Image (cartoon, rainbow, N blue to C red; front, side):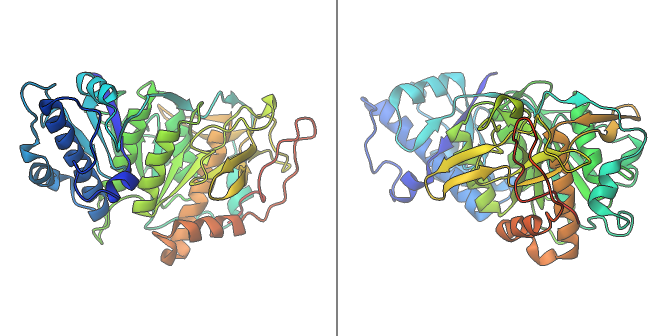
Length: 420
């Protein structure tokens, strides 16, 4: 079944105490009742997201706010099996029949999100860097083995993970996969490409990882093709699951997004902004690999001001020719320069499925270096948990390694390269 993502506008709902207070374009009684019930479900999304309620309590909230969660039989059918709430995003999923009806009625406060495919932040290239993970010593020096992100959970939105790889021996790995309709794909952990395993190895691999003692929560949202719905479903899972924490806390400590939407996608930005704000989590995103085409080619979500964008540098501290960069106008902040920070992203050796290793070059490889550095900082300074602005500041303060713009393309890379 094809699913559609419906974004709830919290500003509209916060300014209307009753879901049916303001009329919509619905022209008959049945449509009006259906619109009212849809808004009740929308309000349930917001209430559950803000209260941090468990997923198991959604049915109770839904039934109390949506009159049993079923609509008038004369209207398009939407029942418990057809609507899934993504509480962290303040959104829900409906089938195509309901989505078409909502678009036709133009219901106030509800927006059917146009889907958009996304890819691993590529194309990435293979490079020869020998048998050494040079990026580890560049970023960590000699402290790699003694100080590695203990007690920190790093969330990864990617193609999955081969958790049986030797790099992850002893690493706690949680895993869930989502198809293009946002449904969970049953089965053991797997990588639908090589990208996710490589990224995970750079975060927490035993020899290739910046934070080898961190735990991982991997959402496979490209299986093999990515969609906005899969991305949203994976993000919701990362923000609402417990991941076996002894303190009972929910959600990961930091999120790595080595993926990119080509378009700006303002509705997805609204959902990401709300989710990260409500759950007080920092998303670190790859800037993209179209830098040689000129400025202002950063991928989303890296171009969003709510994320920390990462560019790539080589071993000499020169910004890679492919590393995307640019300036983006933000209504509340003026012009925001992207990326804000850089990390090694050329010839990065890490794990790929079936026990193998490969060296790859892309901002996708630089991004997990900064995410691993975030885990190291959080293990040293646990008071920064749930304080994304302070964690962002700490990462920027740690970007002490000088960098130089690319001599031909002029790519910029933010304040410097990370070193922890």
